[in-house]
Image (tube, rainbow, N blue to C red):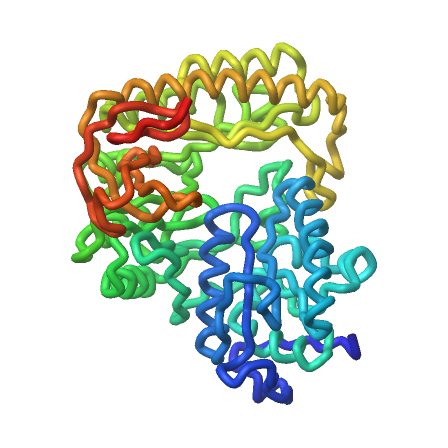
Length: 462
């Protein structure tokens, strides 16, 4: 690449960067994008595609047909970073047919590892942090012109107000109501890669939801790092949920991820009283050991978490609850691990995201605590947690057999032979092809389960 170009400023555009339009296609340059990480990353990918679409870019589904390939990244775990490095290296093969192909990364990893990227992955020509998407078109055009385009500055005020994302499947959509995080859990990089917490004005949230409804979107997921700590002047998260529920056309509302100590009685009341708000909560616990939770600086103990679970189940009978579980955090003993197992047995989560702790350089844990649990022990504990959760998930699915479920049909399966939908409890349902239309809400009798998916009038080969 020629020289380094840094582009900043909310008014930036391809013209203001002084870059000539790429001539790869008479219909505009072509963009291919992949997403690693959480739903926040998926929402940011939609935002980037929306910005590039406004600038005349054409989205393609094959990296070999693209002028620019972007990988939207996650920096939460070391494994995710390794996957991104590996994937960008794999993409180099497409330069055999297209020597001018530009490869770039966006998101948390771009901000977190900006100083290492040029050394470890010199083929990456565009680096855009999570607060630079307002300028993504200028960065992209600069990269196509042969410059190394970089913008990773955090913006304390950026919420992307007024910008719209690209709607993916015509059925479900994301609306980010809060960016950044103020919790500073000792293991987490998010406050450093996404900045401090700031809410999106309620009028902007409602505008985006109405826009999705006008496009035919039925299910909306409200996103934030600690979504239930949302506040804007005198509007809190419970108020916002009620307001979103009044928008015509939206039939289901989800939110993720709430933080346990910010889960107010008013939010529980909205869950119980608003039929559009799905009876499902993802509630990260991380550990079942009070000493470990204290070292993590989570701000709650196990008893507090269990009381919240009881309150949710009392207010919303049958509510589905999922969680995040981390094993092998600094100082975790066998007794600490067994307390996590005991918590899992007490709650019986519907499903969980489970992983072993990995050191993230810029966190408090990396600087002040000792990563003293051997990797083999971490993996053994992780296997035990996964095996137990597998039993609980299968039991939750088996309990739905014989019930009638409302299913929002969202897609055709990857093999092209089944319809896929979700129940209000976020359980996936497989149905015969042609038995409904994508976007329909249908009532279906559950006839079986794979253990991870529910079946309706479908028999899978043994």
